[in-house]
Each structure stands twice: as C-alpha cells, then as structure tokens.
Image (cartoon, rainbow, N blue to C red; front, side):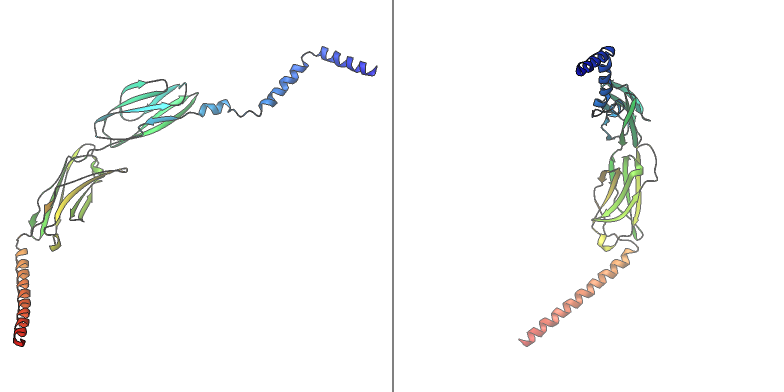
Length: 271
C-alpha cells in the first residue's frame, strides 16, 4: 500500500511539471559542450595568412614590376597596398590581387600588402632594389709623372653610386681602394678614379686592373677592366737609378767572371 502511494506521487509530480525533464536536459547541455576542442569564433578570425610574391626583387632603375598579394581567407573583406612607388594596373581573383608598380627608381623600396578577414587585418612586406651594372670599366695606360705613375679608371653608367667600391690591383695585390658612399645621387652616373702610384721594381710588367663592385644587401655585382702593364719608363728620376743599377750589374758580372777565370787558370796549372 505504501509503495503504491509513493508511485502515485511521482506520477502526479511528473504530470504537474511537464517541462521538468527538458529543463534538466537544457541545464546539462552546457556541461556536455565544455569539453569541445573547437576554437572560439574570435580565434577562428585570426587563423589566416597573407603572402606577397616575390618578396624580394632586384631590377634596373626605371623598371615596371608586378607583385601578387594573396591570402588564405575564404571571404576577404578587402586588399590594400601601401607604398611610395607609382601605382599602375590591378588584376584580382577570389583571394588574390596583383599590383603593378611603375618606373621604380629608388634603390630600395618597401611595399606593404594588407588583407582584412572577419574584421582582422594582417599584412606582408616585399622589398624592391634597383641597380645598374657598370656599362664599362676602362683603365687608361699608366702615365709617368716624376717618380709616380698616374692610373685613371672610368666606370660608366652605374647605379647606385653610393654602394660602389672601386679598387686597383697589381697582379693579385690591391694597391688602392675607395668607397663612394658619399655620392647620393638618384640617377645613373659616370665615375672617374685617379690615383698616383709609386711603382716599385716588383710592379713592373705586372698586369694592373680596375675593379668596380656593387654591394646591395647581400647581392654583389662585379665588373673589371682589361689589364694594362706598368713598363719601366725613363724619366729624370729613373735615369740615374737605371744607370746605377746597370753599373752594379756590370760590377757583379766582372767579379763573377774574374772568379771563374782564376779557378780555371788554377785548374790548368795543377794539370
């Protein structure tokens, strides 16, 4: 009898509160979802990348170039480019835009591309360097002036001059080197290097070259001249030196010859 009364009370309570079971389910739902490993919506927004290609270029001054900016965002809200260079055409696709840049003349420029996805903006950066290898490197034949030889090297149509190093080499030895970093001009330029060279006997009949080298953030561009020879030339200073040298050689030959002649005569007398 007591058991029947208890079951009747349970049935009556369930009938009086029909939403009780669903309410319990609703309370349990958050507890079941607390162990889910899927990222929150704010984290999902930031999970995309932006790339700009190529991210480094080295071109002659005055070139026009294309850069492609792309993203993994499925629905990008917009692409933008920030640069001080002159803009040209744009070509776009679902998740990329190609930008044209005109008449690039600054020796080094940074280009920034930005993409906005779900309210989050990310960017990528590319660098464009411009340079011009010397059109020619010419070393004039040496000119004797007094006791020194004057060497004159011409480097034509080169850019940027501020990153140019010009050196003179006799054989494998550097006899002079100069950096032209003080020149900041934005255009192609011609450079002439003049150096007075006090030649020594070891430098005579050695090939001399002029070397021009551009060093641009790891990119090295080198050019060199055809060789010239430093010949022993006669001058007001070299004549006495040459006469003394010749006299010394004559004395040496006479001493050596006399020694051999004495030895020969001694051998004949003994025989």
